[in-house]
Image 1 (cartoon, rainbow, N blue to C red):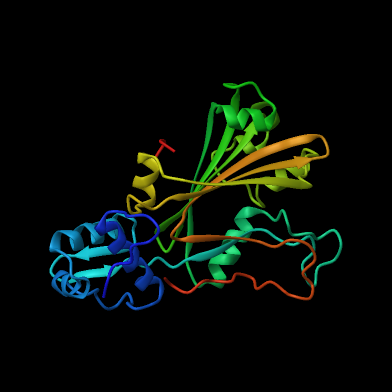
Image 2 (cartoon, rainbow, N blue to C red; image 1 turned 120 degrees about the vertical axis):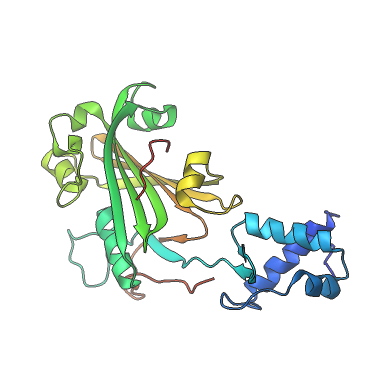
Length: 283
């Protein structure tokens, strides 16, 4: 077995790591059986032991592998959950006026967890902070103006899954249940509806980035596991209502978008891919 050279000459351990990734993706190893020991990989690839160790270190840092003392090196498998972040304009069986594309996020998460046979728990808190520059711009505020942040730390089967922060203008939230330090029955959407600020549309911004130290500590992922960051700006007829920023560990979540009318192709409640509360104020 040889290490593919690729289009550019990269260090040998990186090319070995790339080939191990390929073999993992092909299903050559499963979570209940260890990878070959270092001496076997040395013989398979004809490389030095240090090259093997460096390659395995890369995959451990990416969160793909885990070393178990005295047992060997195994795949570090996280169940990947499909999260439906934006549904079609009208789902099969729904009547006009029951559009689901802006369904309450909490309701969607709970439904998906039940469908996947997993237990969802949420740690909630309310904060009043100075708006970040990007949040202020999206809400039409000056940088540094006060905003109300309603934060949810979601766990599936006690494994960190997502950090969601909903940002509201302080003037909009003042004197409403949005200022309460607990979740609102029926979701924040009911409060917005009572205020005459029902969202009718949204724009999503999706990026991938590496976690900061506090995020990495909370998600408990490998040093090389990135975050998926979804920033949703919700609008009513008068303008922006709120900004929801949700961060997911990329090895545990896949974001699903349904567009247009999908009556001929019903979406399952939660398509789940096969396997492949401590509070912090530093997020």
